[in-house]
Length: 281
Image (tube, rainbow, N blue to C red; front, side):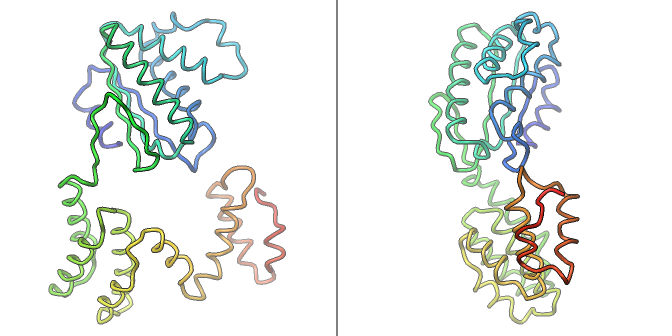
């Protein structure tokens, strides 16, 4: 989606373009439809200040912005565009609550129908992983991982990043990776990194066995990466996961996690101390 937005910025300079990227690890406004509507409305009003006339002035004094009100304002602004062309990119629907996304998609379907009736040129581009399974009645659907270009990208990544310098072994490993990937790019990335680590340790003779032992499931591969590390890795891996999972409220910032890791590294700290440690300070 970032590439699509970048391409649109370069090729369609006369069009209005707004975008939102859901982020499940971010703050509430980064992973909610309220945050999406606020971001899109802000971008639209910034690009077209004249649209402020269609927004009820009393709304600016509200201490909270209900989703229903944001929908009304966004709809009125879009329908007030006249001859302008608007393209809206919304990425990572799977990183928001499924019920909220269904409501949002229904809103945009209705908005699209209204725009057509009003001769407004509105284009909307959604992107999501295969979950959630949400149907859109009037849309062009494109499954990226079934396209030949996706296969080409996987092959290019393997060729560029697999650091095995024996040509025959490299080709054999690359072919098995492509065959077993099942179009899952992240699986390829993780497997290549694990093989490169073994190669750097001088274990080229066992790379075939190492690759054969790797699970085809991405989730199983993650589990193996977490639980089957050496003792030195596990000494910090488990406490770090605890800090991340039990941080309250919200996720730790990188600085907070850094200090938490330093605190965890103290030889005098035991499991009881970690369990009762403050999660934010």
